[in-house]
Amino acid sequence: MKLAIELPSAQADRLRAEAARLGLSPEDLARAALSDLLSTPDAEFEKAARRVLAKNRDLYKRLA
Image (cartoon, rainbow, N blue to C red; front, side, top):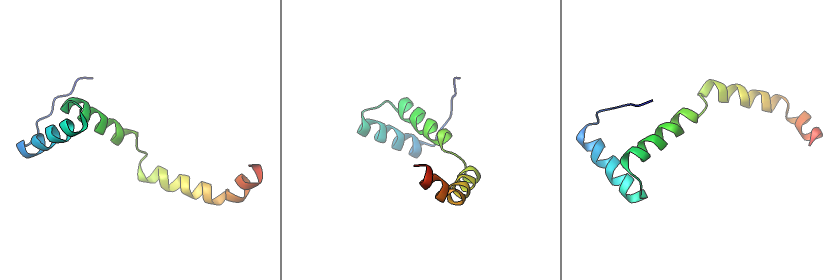
């Protein structure tokens, strides 16, 4: 998927500066940041997972 976005000049400058500092192109840095954002589970999923893990903690210890 190809995506084009327009950033305010201050954000574009910061993106270019951070990309240069990391030795990346601005496009690669934006792609990595978006990938990281999209791969993070949402808050409801994390809440449910913590509840299940806490509920089954003793079982997991016995199985380990």
